[in-house]
Image (cartoon, rainbow, N blue to C red; front, side, top):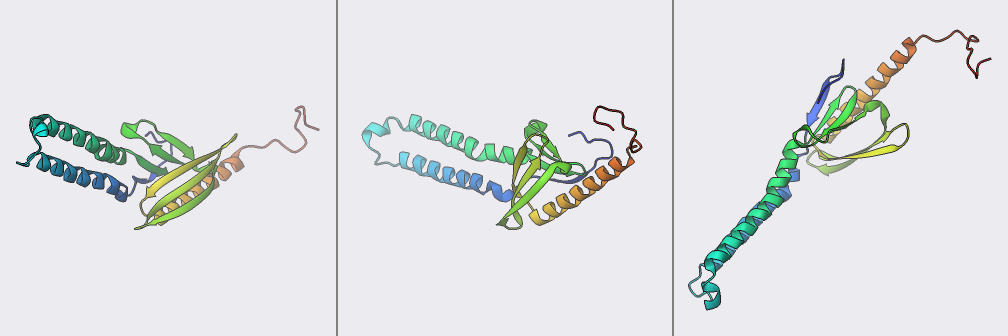
Length: 185
C-alpha cells in the first residue's frame, strides 16, 4: 500500500482470531473422523469384501481428509492472515491476499457507521460511503477492539474534514460581482 503525501497509518489490523474457530473445529473433527475410519478399517473382524480393499479405502479417506483440511482450515487461515484493514489519516483501506484486491475509500466520503458488537471486544462495522454518484457499503467483519477502531476512525474523519475545509478556505475567490461567466451578472 502506497501512502500519499502527508498521509500516515493510524491503525493496521486484521480480523479477530475468533474468526478461525470454525477452521479449528473443521481440523479437529476431520482428524477425529479420519482416526475413526482408519481404526474401523483396521478391525480384524472387517467384512470380507471390504478387507481386500483396506489399502485403497485408507488412501481415499486420507485424500478426502486432506481436501477437507485444505478447504476448511488452510484456506480460511490463509484468508485471515493475508487480509488487513488499514485506517490512515485520509482513507480506509482493505487489502486482499498478497496485496492484491486492495480497495480504499476516502474518509471524507463516510456518510454513516453502524457498529454490531459480537463479544470479546470485537464486532462488525457497517460503513456507508457517499460517492459522487452512488452509495457504497462496506462490512468490516470481526474488527478487534471495535470501540477503539471506531473512535479512531471518527477522530480521523473529523481531522480530514477540517483539513479539507482549511484547504478550501485557502483557495482564492473571485471578487464579488466580477464573475464574467455565462451565469454571472
